[in-house]
Length: 441
Image (cartoon, rainbow, N blue to C red; front, side, top):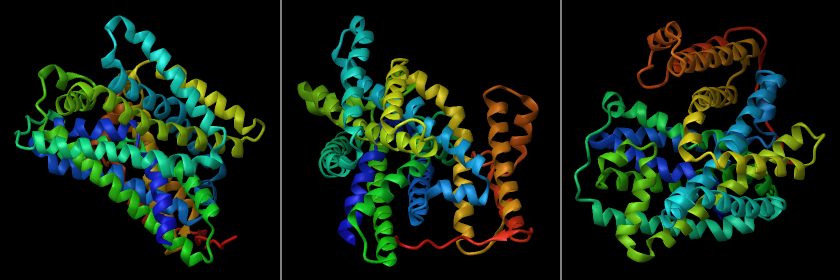
């Protein structure tokens, strides 16, 4: 049991830990200044806690989230939500971000400014061809990622974090930015959204189930126990590296120009590596970041293509894998800052919906809930998430005022109380349904 759980946990940790997991913790460390502890607590809660909980809940029922959402809310909502989620964590945001992060941190500093545009195209072409070839045979993903690449990149990151702590740990943090001064926990919680991990958990729970099936189980009890081992392995790995990378960013001496950039984490990783390792630094960094991001790219191509092939079987898995790889390649050439900027509004909508789906699934495992009540809860949360984006990003003032008047809006959780009220109403409204217990096949 422990061996199966550890092996699957290593596989999932390797697939999860990609571009955002590398660049956002040191960015938070630099920007949170003296408020680092509450900021990293918020980040770990949303970036690790929500991700692992979502993964465990999705894996406990081998029928997956598509079944849970279809029965509790509606089949059409499940299809639309999951299609948008997979496209977001797949070809439109996360897949291209893995490639551009690899290039920006590892390769770009080796090139002259005039060559960087062509360099990005050449690098992403090679990168996506390699990822595509592995993704065409997903049954080999456990051996190629879980047993080989994961230990390599984890070791590289650990070396950087330990040596960085020894070198910079005595430096005082810089002043926190306005967002972290206003609400360090809330800003850290939102920053955790950028990792995309809670959203990816919905997708990767499919890979977890398939991997666990390959390993084989003698009983339902052994299967469930193994899932908890998987969750613990992933949570410990994430938390340790996030805190280490955040600590590095918190104590690294930053220039004013670097602090104003869109992704200070890129600067921190690049400069810290060069200062610690000298002339071999860029080769070390290029290897570390590329391997880290590559594992995520393969996992995302596989899970996204499998979802669309299962939901819309008119096209083959190979066609979907090809299309999503090509889209990822095209968007990757827009550059890292552009990808992060246009992804944020979609994440602020998807994350609350995902969190509340997990809340509903958990509560329903213990008590029957009204289907109209669950639908009402999801409608409220979706409306608040959309209103918060229209209010803040598109400056629709009356919507911004409504969202800001809700409890916990300053902590970036305006949807939380309406979600709890909706779930409480689901306890008393009619047409209640129990969560089905699954049986091992």
